[in-house]
Length: 132
Image 1: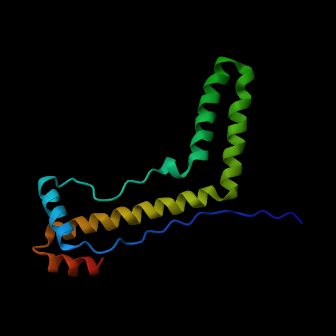
Image 2: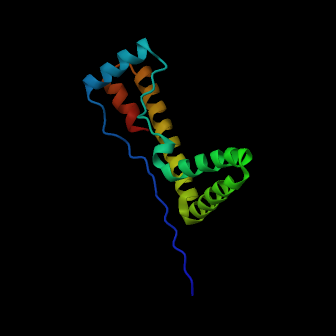
């Protein structure tokens, strides 16, 4: 009997360690000068899903080339088959997990930013962050 294995990458957000008092003061100064400063570390979707990125580029580029010269229409067909097989092998589930990870990370850092801005001193900040 045939059996298909799905490989799904699980992404999870782990809270970073508590800021030290000097880090708190630095971020407090930065946020007072630049309130739109983004504290969250940058993550790039396309760096995580390189295969899918190149398959999409091949699909779109192949369609353009196929309209210019018809014998090249096999390129988007192969790219489409690769994308479908990738989706069935678990990459869609990995993408959903990655999206949830990014949302959790951004929410945490937005809440952290608000805790820094609304706190009067380091002790109050520590109490607020423990609730996050």
